Length: 55
Image (spheres, one colour):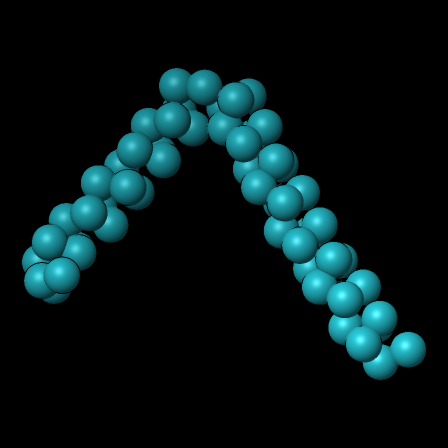
């Protein structure tokens, strides 16, 4: 992907995120909380997997 196109897409994403937070902060916080839960569960599952390999 050309560098200019990548830069434009990143800026569009940032603008969209700011707009989403501004127009609906409650919904935006729910989305962030859900993403955080997914990340935490993935790390915990990976840790359990490694623990099962070692133990």
